Amino acid sequence: MQEPKYKRIILKLSGEALAGDNGYGIEHNTITSIARQIVELTEIGVEVAIVVGGGNIWRGVAGSERGMDRATADYMGMLATVINALALQDALEGEDVVTRVMSAIDMQAVCEPYIRRRAIRHLEKGRVVIFAAGTGNPYFSTDTTAALRSAEIEADAILMAKKVDGVYDADPRINPNAKKYERLDYIDVLNQGLAVMDSTAASLCMDNNIPIIVFNLTVEGNILKAVMGEDIGTYVGR
Image 1 (cartoon, rainbow, N blue to C red):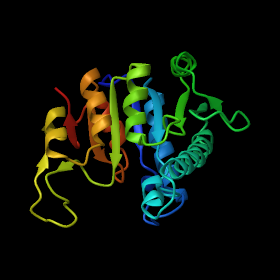
Image 2: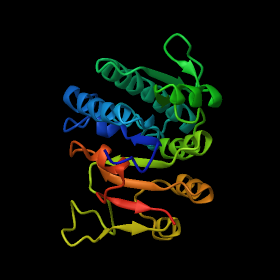
Image 3: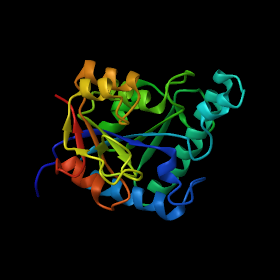
Image 4: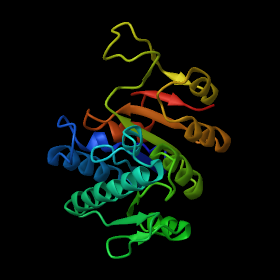
């Protein structure tokens, strides 16, 4: 079998991705499908770390827009990511994958604290590591978490799993003439304000030369294709 292009990856899952078509909460068939696709990666020796968002339960920015203290709203969002991480851990263990949830906020009753060297050791032992609670700080998105953790564990790439098949110059769900980009440089993402990830995360990836692959999560098998280096979405890098 062909060797995977990327041997250690960060898979960035938005909370909305876990909700499937429901728009809220955790959809069983969706999370089971994601777990089975991750199994395919572990079977070919890919070291998988996951950063999961919490937007299917709570979005800190939305809370602050309604008058809530921004830091409080963000901490609530971090706790939502822990709920999603535990659900994903359960789905993976249902597929006999050894999994560890590591939280940036100390809550040892349900998950391990994030320690960089321990995370790398888990990956080297073939365990899937799920990073929860963002960076542990308000005002930082889970996109930034994905970029930061990628740099820390020396991941080969970030796989940005979305509900569209790449990056466009406009919203393809609204504009049928939207143009899809096959390749982009980091600076293009920053200068054009493209909806790949927030500017802090994109800058961190640029500074550390971490490739980003944006692809459609809703097509089963796409995670494996992205790891193998197939052209299924948009590649962001140098």
